[in-house]
Image (cartoon, rainbow, N blue to C red; front, side, top):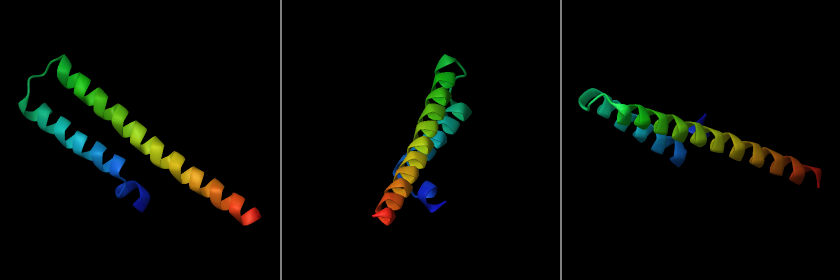
Length: 68
């Protein structure tokens, strides 16, 4: 869990969510708002996927090193 919370990519996605929330509160509701939320969702998905893949790569490396 710590790998997710303290990862720079996840923190960046969280800041993006805060920005999207703020824009939703005060900004106009038009296509740019939807695009901002879509952008945040893609960023968050990529960040989470990167952390998962990194964790899997570390596990595979550890397994390979233990077999040697």
